[in-house]
Length: 173
Image 1 (cartoon, rainbow, N blue to C red):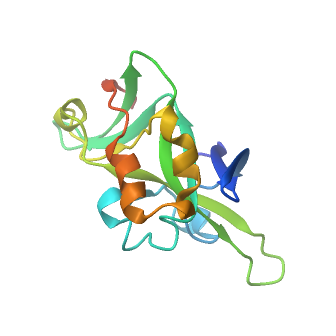
Image 2: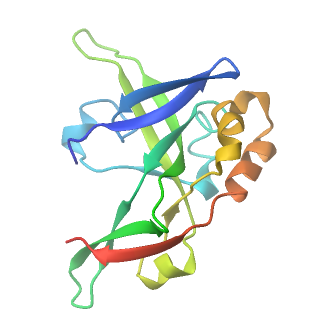
């Protein structure tokens, strides 16, 4: 698990306040960071299932210039690929987040998030990966960050109306 903190943007009370939080990319209590290292994604096709407690309630954005994915190389070994939008740009990637409250004395509360992923565009699929983060359009920021004022169908429409950049990739192993 990278030790670099992640920043997400969230809002509260149906109006934009632009909060930035450092979060762990987990979705489980803090001890999971050491016991089960890794980052977690929220598959778009499971948002109304596993993520129903967050989807339509607690949305955020992760600012992304590049993302990394593991693929199997021709020799069967793991290869890490770096994907970047072309032309270069910072993407506003949709996420859901949660505030886990400490349940035992001495434990700390935990802010966690999961990046929402969908089926990949052709250039990512051709590189060997089956998921892609969903970048939303700038004009949808307020609607995305204030989901409780909308139906889930309206929130789904924001993800469907996603930004569709072309991605280049390189071996980052």
